[in-house]
Structures are given as C-alpha cells and as structure tokens.
Length: 247
Ligand SMILES: Nc1ncnc2c1ncn2[C@@H]1O[C@H](COP(=O)(O)OP(=O)(O)OP(=O)(O)O)[C@@H](O)[C@H]1O
Image 1 (cartoon, rainbow, N blue to C red):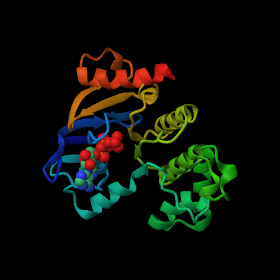
Image 2 (cartoon, rainbow, N blue to C red):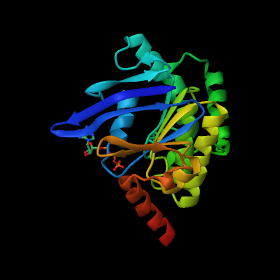
Image 3 (tube, rainbow, N blue to C red):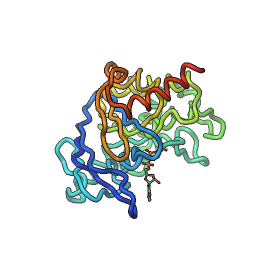
C-alpha cells in the first residue's frame, strides 16, 4: 500500500501541488486524472523520488520514502517499476536486453536466470517472438509492452505508469490498459496510472483521483465518476466524452 500525505510543491512562484493526500492499494489500478498542467506528473515524480516535495509524506507499506534512511529508500526503489511516457527504451539494445537491463544494473543474478526472467516477462506481454528485435523495428504499442515487461522484470510491488496510452490508437490503448490491469491483479501490485483517457477511466479505474489546480477535487471509481456533482470534474469528463462521441 502507498499512502501520500499532504504533498505540496511549488516551482518559483507557482504552486503546483497544494496538499494532496491519498491511499493506493495492492491489486488495484488507481488512476490520477486531470487536465494539462494540473500537477499529475509532478505528483507521480514526488512519489517515485524524482522530485522532492516541499512538504508531506510518502509511505510505502508504512516505510517513509522521503525521510527514511538511505537503505530504506534504496529498498523501496528496488520495489518500484516505472513505465515512462514514450517507453524510454534504449535504441541500441535489443528488446530482450532492454527488459533485462534492471536485472543487470541492480542484481547479481546469474546470466541464464536473468534471461529466463526477462523472457518470462516478454512472454507475459505477448512479445517473446520479438526478443531479438531492435526498438526501432517495433510499433508504438509493442514498445509500450516492452516498457511494461521491463517495469515488471524486478517483480515490483509498486508500478507507476505515466500516460501509458499516449500516442496509441484507441484499440491498442484498450489492450495496453487491460494488460496493466491484468498484471496488477495477477501479481497483486499497487499500480498508479496517470491518464486523461476517458476510456481508461471507465474501463480500468478501480480508483480514480481527480486533480484540479494542485488539489484533489474528487475521488471515486469508474462506477461513480459519471455521477459526480463536482463541476470541474464534470467539465473535464464532458470534454472527453464529447470528443469520444464525435469519433
Ligand atoms: N521541474 C520543473 N520546474 C518548473 N516547473 C515545473 C517543473 N515540472 C513541472 N513544472 C510545472 O508544473 C506544472 C504541472 O506540471 P505537470 O507535468 O505535473 O502537469 P500534468 O498534469 O502532468 O500535465 P500533462 O497532462 O500536460 O502532462 C506545469 O505548469 C509545469 O510547467
């Protein structure tokens, strides 16, 4: 479980996060939604240690990630998997080498075992046949799958996905969403996904947190989001729904 408490962050004179709290549970896909510039990525970065918040706490199964000693922080980092926007694959490495990379960097696992584990993850995302291909030979959806395989190769307790659907067509987006949800259920991972994709919210939003101007304006799930009485959220949903209906 991840608990965030009163997270605030200001850049210069711009307050991006104004005190955000929330809980993310194992086996659940939690979505952070909101318009552009509302602080979603900054919140995610605060949670994974890429940005230091000005105040607040981030607890991983009760362990304080921000003030815990270095060993605790290191331990927590090893339990995280991250799928970055754009997949962030190494162009000069094969698919298999990309997936194996965290094992190479962070473990002393024997070579054959590392390869076996990486192949298992590639199989799980349906890409074992592409193991020896280079990232430039893959479609956007395949790259995301490789990114997911790499994010789970260390058997993470916590999985963070920043806009996993960006640049994908609607059908591929749905497949990627479903894969993230399946993996979350199957390995009981605490998963946090940033998205502004309405389809994702309705399909995999077991828990949804809506950010608006640095505040958490609403929290609920995919069965309650369309019944919200928060005008800012309704405006956000309506804009998305409108676009979807036009399509
Ligand atoms: N390192 C930084 N230095 C200064 N300002 C920053 C920094 N990182 C983010 N910001 C600002 O914080 C605000 C929130 O950015 P953030 O990337 O979290 O938005 P977002 O909700 O993820 O938006 P989008 O959906 O467009 O990605 C933006 O105004 C951005 O310019």
